[in-house]
Image (cartoon, helix red, strand yellow):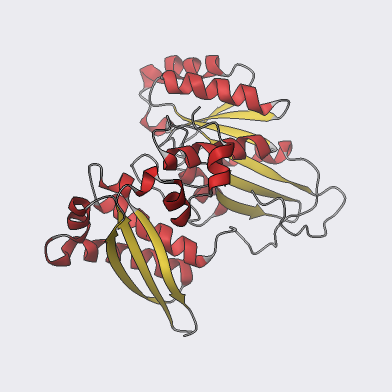
Length: 319
């Protein structure tokens, strides 16, 4: 996280703190973050492992500042990339002032939720825990009590709230409770700053988001995007050149598509999202390259921007 961020002057009663969003993949953490911050700072897709690093979003008022940290979904680690995802999530959990466990209440808890509850209890100490039961809009009436009670039993000490991040239901109530729990402290980030990610990094993530929506089967899990050039010297145009890395030659063919058709779809979707972000016309050049087995190699994982070897070794590698 960004403990080294420059602290800004604030009133003696100003409140500021880190709020970690943890949970299983596809629980809706990124959708919650974007809704509260008011713009896309974390990509979203229906596929697991969309979030691959701690995504920071900042919401500031004249009385408080909430620094949200959207952690990767916790999962069983199978290779080096998974280990860095778990390490990132554990880091967010340990360093937060307030912890939000975001769960998909439309489904009953599974064994992974029980392990997550144990992890949260072992790391949270005396800090505040909110159980945010998301996707209430997908919950059938006869499942409200059974599903809700099952999650509450996993974290009986936690306050809980039913929400729909997609529809915005109950989000203001959760935010109000978060603000009540924030510690007194000076502002960490300037009022106009909403994330710690450079536009170059966000552009790469939006390319990956477009690929996640456009591709199917196992391809997205072995895909990474590295922005090799980001030129905004022209006030009317941002020029971006990005490399899309895949696991093998078969995946390369799928990403490119017949006559380059799939790569054009990905590029068109990503360009529109990037233009909305930078509020300028964007030239986006995409190429595809095979980096065989990159997810299993610590150095390659770090090269793709997903944490260094020290972070990989510092995590438990599982949860």
